[in-house]
Length: 146
Image (cartoon, rainbow, N blue to C red; front, side, top):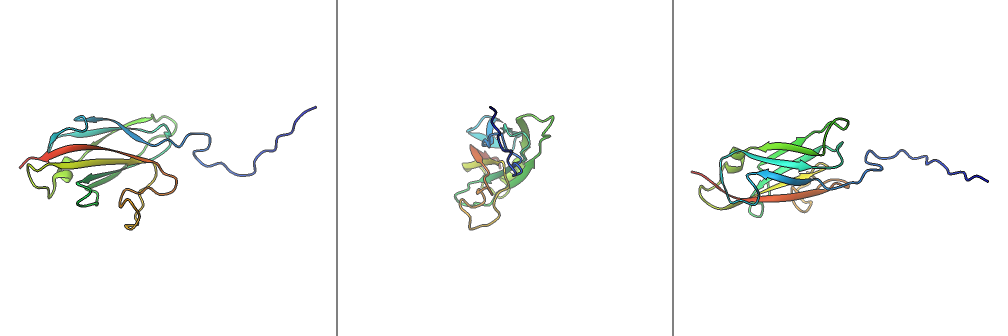
């Protein structure tokens, strides 16, 4: 006796069979949380085991005072030859633009595996991710030199 298993008629999604794991910041230079003095070279190493995902990154300075990102960019990956780890340099000049010199500030780096929601009423503002996207955040305590 044999058993017949029906084949699903639906097309599977691009992440089918793979976990929808949140992207994370696994390392930074200088090391988070600091404290650090800007400007200096800043890098973050991002990890997403869903290597086909494009990563979306937003950088915020003192988010609680002003939730607008000071820098936004995407990090592409080759779904065939890519790796889970991707390193990106951040723009310290954009982070310090308009900041009060020698005053402590918080620099948040948010990484997501789907685009950020552009609806400014969606909470958290400028950090909400669309669809079934996942995100994570790490931060530096920083000061901008005069």
